[in-house]
Image (tube, rainbow, N blue to C red; front, top):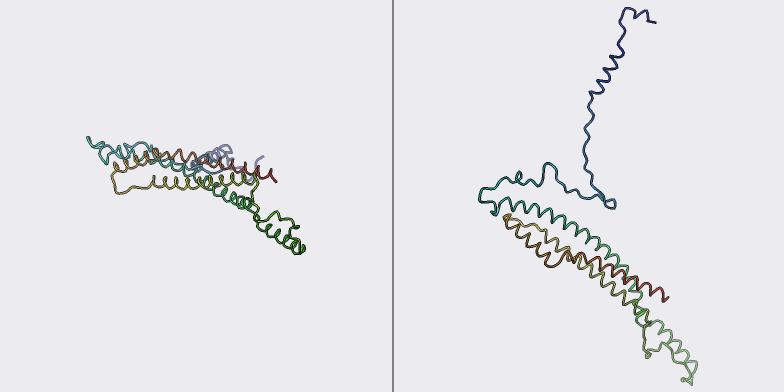
Length: 260
């Protein structure tokens, strides 16, 4: 049934109106999504993303242009500029990896040395006579002399008499020997770690006011020095020293607990 008031008016086209609404809704552009480059994580820590955007970073022809014919190997040629760029990426990754390992070793060696020093301070007292006990024993012996009055020879000699030689127990000797050696290894690890970190800092120090050829030669000379002095091998041996130090500590701890 139609409303008498709208009898003379045409009925609206509902299908056309619905199509218009769909077209208007489809014409609205969705907001452009912002691409976020996510990197992997190691123990919840995001890794540093060193990838470059905005073109191929290895296209050195576009970056530096072509060399003049006959000047390809000059002191400022594209060859040396390319070498410095590639060496910079390699050195940054290598030094960052070594520094991260050294920082972890320094923190662990510092904490372990502090804890081990506490144990050594307590157990080292067992290697020398307890003079407090000696004084107490001599006082008891002096009282015995006064009570004896006449016959001094009848008073038994104190077992803590200073003339008697003192010898620590075998367990105390082993425990202190192991723990002192463990502490020495831990401190040696910390010392070598600090030295290697200084070497790496000098390795990546910037050389200015010199041509690309000179910077390339200095960089190669430094790298050959690292290889000659076996710096990567030294850094790799630092965790082994800490492992040995830990093993000695636990061995001494077992002996100490067994002797209680």
